[in-house]
Length: 373
Image (cartoon, rainbow, N blue to C red; front, side, top):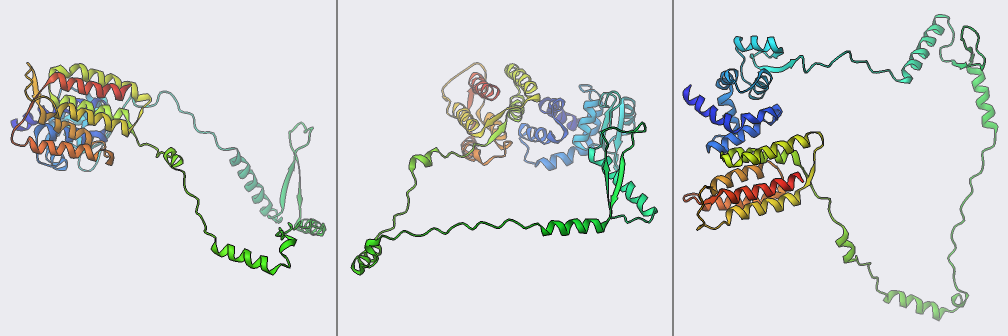
């Protein structure tokens, strides 16, 4: 259990604090970040299943979160709820468990709607339809033809009771009206005149001229219209766009994964920008993100090896987190950058390379400014 607590503590430092802002279905990002942080070779599914039963007691005892945040983590990690934690949840709100004692949903008084909610008004046609059905039922009870149309003629001056005059039209009267309508002559369709090919009188009787024209037609070359190159250049495909809020969330995971106090200012900057984009998200073209990622890779991978600084970090570590940032975009546009990162990591497999923190900070700050502005 001590080894489990050590592992979960590192997960707490890296990813669990993001659960305050992430919905339950984004917990995969936390497990992915934990996998990168611990350099584990297990898949995300194996990590989730291994922590599924033992991770729940750690969440229940953790004092860093309130009851709502603990319930949110329980739902995300599918942890089993014991009796002690169930009492805590029942005091704070209304928990709902499945057959395996796993928390499915949790609702507090703050989540409930304030005041009475007004019901939606029925459509205007609903009342009319119900009135027609009621009239048909009444006619059936009186043995009257239910298929006769009922017309409601509203008088300009209604009586004191507000009633309207009603009368019914029989099927025979309808048939008479249809016969009279058929007697009315229909307008004739005007035929459009066919275009007549104009033939010059000079060639009607001249057989020599007609043969010359036929020979010229046989020798004629049909030219196909060529497309204008300038017109083709003006046709541009609609660029793909990415969510600025999701990009900032992934950048925040990268900064937390670097695990250094010098990045706290950038983490707070990203956190504030995420709050600004909660109400109105920003769409960023993938081409611009691709350019910024390429710049970020060149600043980190092509740094001067002979540079010596007071505080440095591992290039291999930064590239692993950058690979995580590229993979989470789930786009084929970044396949080339991902291939560059993989090749650089293969070169650094046995021997690592150090890079000053200032270069990493400058590269990430430039990327954050582009996404947020």
